[in-house]
Image (tube, rainbow, N blue to C red; front, side, top):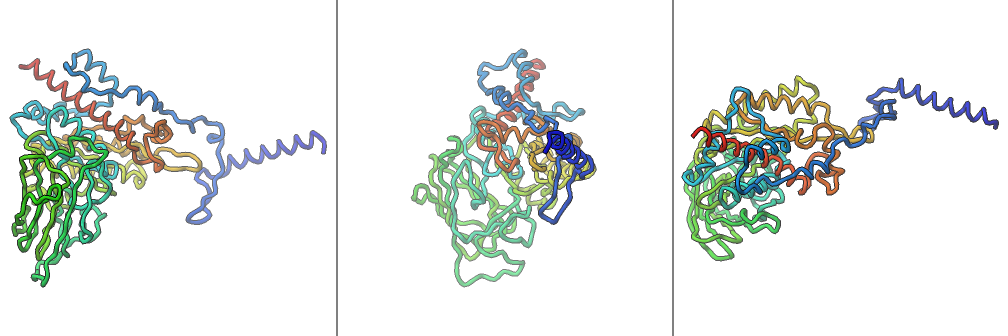
Length: 480
């Protein structure tokens, strides 16, 4: 074959491929439910946008511990730090939306206890993010113990190890329980657990007693402050006959008591003179209470509860019994709510309008919380970057920025403060960069952080939070 014939063939193939690039549908041709036939476009062939554009090395390099400024921050320090953090964003008509909470922090010695409830989706599951924030706040303001904990193990916990008897059933208000409940009195963790079957209003005493146990032991990877506690509280309700409860520490019985009959929430608390280890709680009776939570605390300090609602978009508060929530929040004395949601809605938001509709539903959740706990402050942490695979590349979901903007607007409309995790990570396509970072900061699902990434993002939020608190303190010094 002559050289010019080879040249004609090559040029012809190139022209044919170019024509296919022009006419082939960008979204591909669907063959069946599982297969889509794609052909690269000119943009994909020659664009350099496939490369990571977020410099994770710079993100890691800019990490700092704001608590290292032991002598306090000067105005110069504050202005320099502002350049290094993704700030908390306040409503335009209320730049002091967190002052009520900050005032309590400055007076924690007289306040006694301060409580933060951190609700979120699977991004905080297993006490991730919350554990870091709790440890830093307790080191700065005092307090020991992890606060509220699910009565039965749902997933592996960072801060505590749990085991339980096999006869526990978990009922949730967000669709991921082991059983369906006949009512919506789920309590502060939007879930409760039972070891005896749930019944309707007609209850008959069974012929034999039920028994169950829960065990809590120290985690080898948790923060030391979490594993230290003197007080144990059991939050429960909907109990039709007395139930015997036994508490053991290091296999030694430290308390034998009974839980009271009643439909409303009750709290059983054991206060110890010394720190407890290897706690076992045993139950025995003809009925089981709805156990909402077990709490581990000390006498004073700051407490941060981790309440992970896997699969939830955060629109669950208005579907939960408001009277019980009000009772629980009042007893707990909640001072600040951190609501970290949005990620579970990202794959299903198709346009700007649907993003605004979701944010509007979320707005009503914030307003509901404000109505039943009017003195509490609210911070909303928006979704992280999330990526999906398109052809051979992982890219940010197309409407994620619409969700971030809509959530910010809804939060500010409700009088809350917003922290933009998406921007903190680096914005568009940052998740891909976090997955490809060394050390890796996000997992291969392109959604969740690795333990190292969790520490980085938690530190970013904590620094922004303490910076705001420091500015509050400086502002109040000048006015006094």
